[in-house]
Every structure is written in C-alpha cells, then in structure tokens.
Image (cartoon, rainbow, N blue to C red):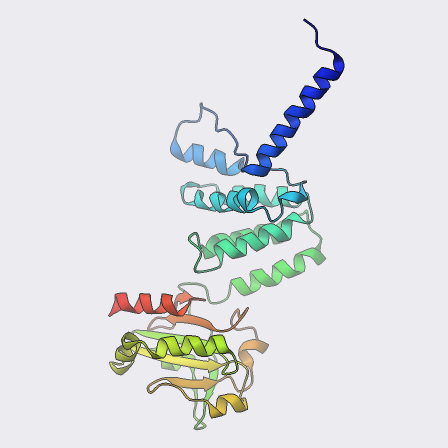
Length: 296
C-alpha cells in the first residue's frame, strides 16, 4: 500500500511537532551507548553530550524552568561523577555561543546555582570554570566578553580557603585598625553593611540576639567586625552596636573603590578563621548561626 505524498508530509510534520513539544516539556537527554560500561565513562559521555539535543536556537526555551533551568541544574548535579569537567563546560559554552541570547541566560543560571551559598549545588570552582570558558571562547567578541571578564575577576577574590583581603577601618572613637590584626581567635565574623540599609540592620539584630554569638564573643573565641562600607556617614556615627563588637566604617570607601570584595548587595557576611582565611562567604544570618551552633 502506497501513502499519498501529502500524507507522508503530514505525518512528518506531526512527528516533528511531537519532538518539539517533548523538548518544551522536559529536557532531551542523550542516550549513553550500551557499549560504554564503567560509571566514570558513562558519566563523562553524558556530560560531554548533555546538550546535543537541546535547541539553543529556540529563544522560547529561555526562562523555561522545566526544561532549561532544570536541565542546567541536573547538569551541575552530575559533575561530582565527571572527570572531564573542563571539556563538558567547553561543549556547553560552544553551544551557548551559537545564539547570542543564550549566553547571558546560562551565565545567569550559573550564577544562581553555583555562586549562591543557599543553592543545593553551590560550587565556587564550577562557577569560575563556567566564566573562564565563556571568557576564553572564540564565539564572543571582546566587547561582549567585558561583563564576564569583570564577573570572573570579582569571583576570584577572597575564595574559600584563601586569606581575606586586608583593609583599614575606623571606629567612632577615632581608633583605626586592620582586618588582619583582629584575627587570632578562633573565628572572625565580618559584616559589610550600612545603617541606612534595613536588611543590614535586620541581619545585625538577628546575630546580636544570638546567645551563641554572645557567648563566643565573651569567651574571646569570636571577633565580630561590622563595617559600614558607605564611609563615615552621619547615620553610622549616630548608630550603635552590641557590646563586644567592633563597629567600624570604611572611612575612605577603599573596599568599594579598590574592589577588594565582591559586593553585589548588602549585607555581605563572611566567616574567617584564625588566619583570616575564608571559611564561608556571602552567607545569611541563619547559616552563620547554624555554623557556630556546631562549633560551640
């Protein structure tokens, strides 16, 4: 039995529509060949070919949480089992660059999932790897790379396990000090904020109300250094801080001007060890309290 030509065309169009609809409903995963046996080899194959079936030309997938965002999240979740991570991210970036609108979208997803401490797949190293591959790619002009180069530069500052950048602070009584000089106890809780910032004040109040924080400060195990990054403002001069805290300001706004720390919004909270090395960064008050409750 021979089908009319229009019927064949109709069936082809219907099949193509089903495939496209399937992609819009769920992420199209590649099939790992059955000949690849070991878990490591299978994980590497999946990572290297993960984006093969994703339609980067379809702008309708930008912002699609069920397909694009969930797909990216799952891609990150397999990275602990992948040894060819650099090649996997190179493959992703190469595909991203085929559509100018996809690159900023996926970089934003990387920031959300990899550089936010509240993310379940938070991974500073993978975020840097993503930015490095974007900056090194040949698919973007130098002008387009400008923003990503800046993001990469800032993301490299004060990484976990490295010594936090030193700076000078001013207290209300005129005393000056340096960050590195307050390290020596077990921990330093470093808060960047502004008394004019309601969220900053809420964070300080949460931490000040903690018996754990108070006890560790009283026992000289913890130094709390709160710094107004907006300079010697009138609001800061009139504000107060809990007993035992160093409540200071960045008089000349060096932290901002020299870009010593990545400050996307206030407050910014770091936990440092006795050598001023970064233990946690960009954390929320509840994460701080949980960390110190485990150290008490």
